[in-house]
Length: 89
Figure 1 (spheres, one colour):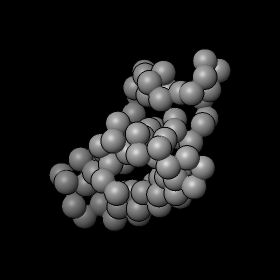
Figure 2 (cartoon, helix red, strand yellow):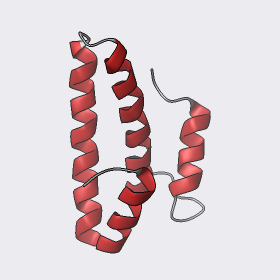
Figure 3 (tube, rainbow, N blue to C red):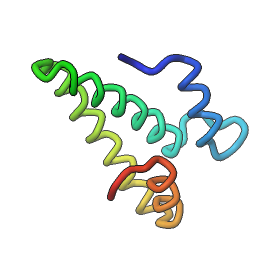
């Protein structure tokens, strides 16, 4: 139900801004998106899992706040990020 360590490492490699970057908003958004996609597929099979649904809503809210922060900093980076992740606005 959660992403593996290898998946997380691949996401960090793909979305980092510098070689030592592991926690920039871009990386955090990519990791949250992967977790959201995993939970979404879980909830399609287990529709009455309300605890996981609450967790999903919290993850979506956290990702939305980070996306708003990136949009305030650099609108071009925001557009690039949502297009790479396949997130609708």
